[in-house]
Length: 126
Image (cartoon, rainbow, N blue to C red):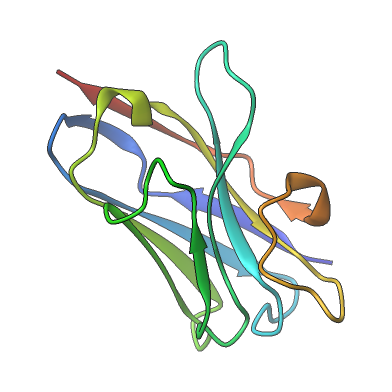
């Protein structure tokens, strides 16, 4: 139903910034909460941020709060993750996800999400 493609990952020095994009296709995702998750080397997948369908509500993991900003442009069917003051521990594959549940909330739980992208690698060097 929905395909998600992440882009914008790459290699950046600690303290730098990077902006990830998640382009959705197949159907509009304006009613879906959209989340970002990440998985570092040898680590479990973890929640990063989520934004409500209308963009009026956001939730962040404590580890990225005040550094990352999630946003969306529903006219472009795209969600973004602005990452500032990047740290080495931010190194991970970042995944975009969509929650199609009719009465979906801004969940931190990966199993609440129905559609996933293939991920984009973010590497932060010292």
